[in-house]
Structures are given as structure tokens and as C-alpha cells.
Image (tube, rainbow, N blue to C red; front, side):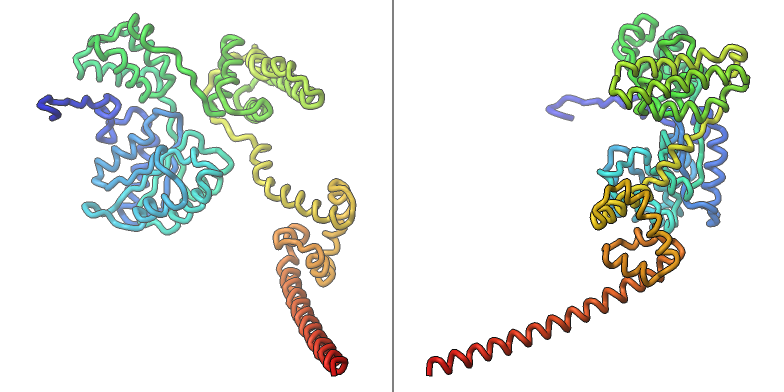
Length: 465
């Protein structure tokens, strides 16, 4: 009460109708079965894997299912969501403590880390390494969610968890929930309006419920006129899997090109995604040939852009890799609409895995080039191959070279993986010997300077007297 006035806080529908039980979560039967089985393993004290990663598009029920399981199984839920700080220190303070302690009122806690794919390499330095370390020592189940789990930086995390996939909700699923909410709230809803809201939500139940509340608030009815007037088009950014799917199923050229604009993928990366998944989606050989012909021409245009700097050619490249690919599928048009599990481009994965090695080679070439007064390209093509031969066949010579060039341990491992430990040992020994020798020379030098000083003082005394 404020100044004698009752203040009633209206609970948002998205919170009011949040699932309380597992059965309340719409669809996702496979995900429910997998996650409940995993939770039961924890409750019996015999988990095969200590953490689970739930992945799928926004608003499909990932967080809701975890909350419903915690509520139904009487588990204490500790949540760090996307708005929380997720630096190493924050994870140590909240997540590690929760993962290593039993709950007060329950046998287990559940630690929920929401949207781990949003963890930044720069702002959240050390966060992923800390999560992996927490998983190893956890005595409570750890659940993580992600919209895009295939980011290369999450590869170590994928290897340490059970992966649980959530499907995009259908328009029918969303309409059922919206109808139930309208009935509970006593709101009159047109079928056409519910169709419109469910369609524009694109499988995101959370946004559909929010849209329904926006239209119903103040009018106590949901009509198609109100829905179209109050709800503005929403600019979405889609995950790579969804972008590729939208390109394939496009009925019009503008739809295919629009899909390419609703992603943070570069045109080169988008070509790699389409290239990787095209044979999975298209089965007819002739259709596949036409699609690859369009994709290869797009790649030619991208090459010309890089060579000439003429970015006016980008529109042609985008049109070929989107509409050109989609409308190449003529013989078996039904294959465009088949649900296919797409995979992350192997070339991008390989580049990510070898990034550190390539950077190490660049640093080594820079050192060699500086000492041999040659270019980096010459160092890479002419000198480094000979260094590898020396490091693989003459450990003492390799150690002397490594010491002279001041090479790091990783550079030594790059030049000779099998002999690196012995060479590093020899380098340390040589460094110690050099240090001792320089110490003796320094002491000798200091002694000579003292003697010279005494002689100088004696000469001065003789002159004065």
C-alpha cells in the first residue's frame, strides 16, 4: 500500500502460465524422456554423465522443462541466466558452490546455466574452462541451454555433456496454448487472430504469449484487426541451421535472399553451410548438379570481389547462393521440405581446430625471418622444413638452435612432437650452464675491477707523497 492506495501488480502471462509440471511443457516428448532418465540416474547416485546441454530454437521450452522437473521432483534450482555476469569469478562464486553442496530441503540441487553459447571469448575470459572444471567435480546435476550448440568454441563442452535436442514448436502446438490462455483469462479470441499470432511467432511460444497479452490488454478481446494493427513485423536473427532451411524451402526469390540477411554469417561462411548440407537435403542427381552449379558461380563472384575489391558483385553472389540454389530443385520439389538434420561445415571446424597451429607457425616464421634476414614466406617454405629435419634427428643441435632463437616450448613441439620433451630438457640444461658461466665471468670481471681500483688508489697515493 502506498499513500493509502492499493497497488496491484499484474503478473505477466509468460510467468503466470509457466509450466509447473513436466506434462505442461508443450510437445518435446523425446527431450522430456531423455532428461528425466538422466535426472533419475542422478537421484540414484549413478550418473554416467554429470551435465546436460539442451539445445534448440528460442521459446521451445528448454528452460521451462528444467524448471518443471525441479518443481515436480522437489529439487532446489540455482539459475544463472543470460543477464547475469558469467565471468570466471561469478561462476566460481555461484555455480561451483551450488554444484558442490547438497540442498537444505532436498537431496539434490540443479544448477542451470542459461544460454552458454552467449558466453564471450573476451568479456567472459576463462568462463568455459571454469564450467568444464565444475562439471568434473560436481555432486549435483548441471544443466545448460543453448540456441546454437555447434559453435566451435563449445566443442570441449559438447564432449563433456549429454546432448538433448528440442524441436521448433509447430503452429498447432502454439495455437493450443494460446487458446487455453484465452479461455482461462476470459478473453474472446478469433481463430484467424490466433493463426496470425502463431504464424508470426515462428515456433517461439514465449513471443507468441507476449504478443497475445499485448493485443488482449485493454480490449479484453483478440481480433485479427487488433492483432495486425498492434503487432509490428519482427526482425529476427536466425541460427545457421535455420537460415539454410529457410533458403531451401523458399517459394520466392525475395524470401531466399531475406534469409541470408537474417544471420551473422558472412557470405563465405554461408556458402560453406549450404555446400555441407545440400546433399543431405536434395536427393535428385540433376537437382543437385544445378544447385551446385549455382553455388559454384556464387563462389566465383566472391573470389572476384576479393581480387578486385568490387563489392557491387556481392548482390549477384548472394542471389546465386540463395535463390539460385533453392530454385535449382525442380525434379523433386518435395525434397526441399523434408526435415533433415544439418551438420556444421567440416571445413570451418577444421579451420577452427588448426587456428592455433597456424598462428604458432606464423610466430615461428617471424622469428626465423628476423634472424635469417629473409621474408616470412621464405622462412615457411625454405627454412622451417630444414629445422624440422634437424629437430627430428639431432636433439643437441635442435636444443642449441632453440636456445639461440629463444623458441617457446610450443614451437619446439611444433617442430618435433616426438622429441620435444628431450629437446626442452636439453634447452633448460644448456640455459643453466650458460647462466653459471656468465655468473663466473661476471664475478671475475668484478674482481678485476676491484684490483684495478686498488692499483689506481695506490698510484694516486704515490703521486701525492
